[in-house]
Length: 85
Image (cartoon, rainbow, N blue to C red; front, side, top):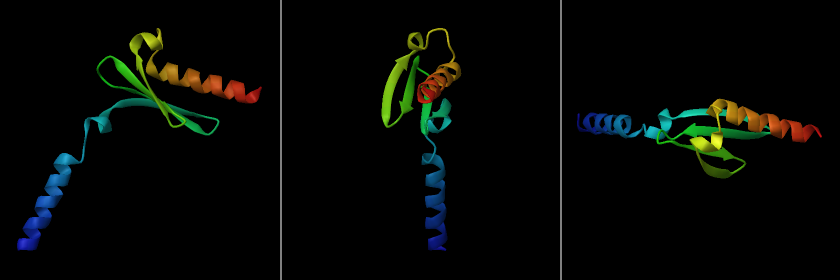
């Protein structure tokens, strides 16, 4: 009985602690030249752009008038275009 209570406590603790805010972030991604490019909305007016082992923080003005999805797809289109040259 004691082992069951300990196991149940551990399972409940993992359920409550296992999910962070990052798990629910709104992200868009694509692949160019075998590299995944991802942009995520930080829900504070900033975005995190990741790709090729690099991370950069962007603001809404950095995206211009584009949505985050259009922005990341534009980066991948540019990467594919440069690879074709």
